[in-house]
Length: 360
Ligand code: SF4
View 1 (cartoon, protein in one colour):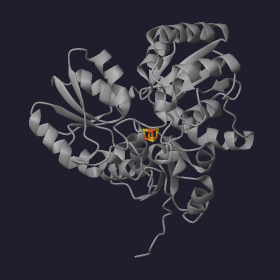
View 2: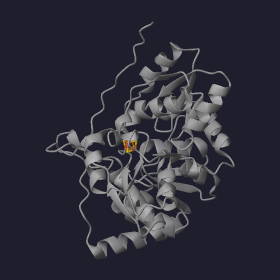
View 3: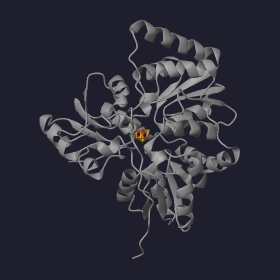
View 4: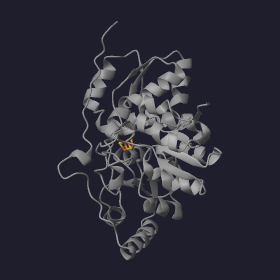
């Protein structure tokens, strides 16, 4: 058997850096109310619409809901920004989401509350190492997760999100294609297991999801025997193995609504609880454990980059027009091919119920 060298790129959680993550000081009630009003006014004045990810602050999600914007996963964020007529898209999330919006909407201005909000999957798959790796495997179709830079998308044949990854890979398998998958090794391995496709996996991971722990999850489940376990497939296999439902963020919210259980243990970023509680207000949601007994909590089930999005920097970006996303035009054109394929593939699909139920 041929030995394949897959680059391993270390990525540091900003909470581990000297000084830790960017601390967002809690706001007083008056200041918070004033900022929310200011953001709503600015959105109107600037012909802007707010598109927020489920993992962002609840206040930001609420503003998006109340101003005709959208709170969604990466796929829906891209689809919504693409069809909304506003001339400015304000993307609250992490950098690749802003870049995806720009790839699809070059004529629109795309702003973000901060340009420092990264993603460990994106950082762990730099184009200068990924491109030669792809070139070394020309017989494979390159499928990359949306959590990648524009330059990586430019080298890919397909972009996917977790809501349609299984469908896209099954489709490619039907055509006899073998896959080079990047960057998330856990999601890749899950898709490989479900589809049976021949997949060569890049070795990236999400700093939030990879810290969910199976042993502690079993202990929590023992205390809540009737709870259903909802797991995002960026989690380790041992955690996925314990799931009642595996799916993307939108699919997990849908499952919390659909399933008869009154309690759920949720293995994904806890920012999702805002929408889960909205969709199933009488149900109870518990965070899946992220650390063993006595261990330091590095992720605490919340993305260190998503939490950099705050009311103050959102208002400041709208006011100043700073933090605009720019993508080199040659890269954008190439990245559009693989990204548009995802949009076209998902056209007409109601992906919310594409979650996998694991029957006991
Ligand atoms: S939660 Fe994980 S995958 Fe999502 S943006 Fe943060 S680091 Fe990236």
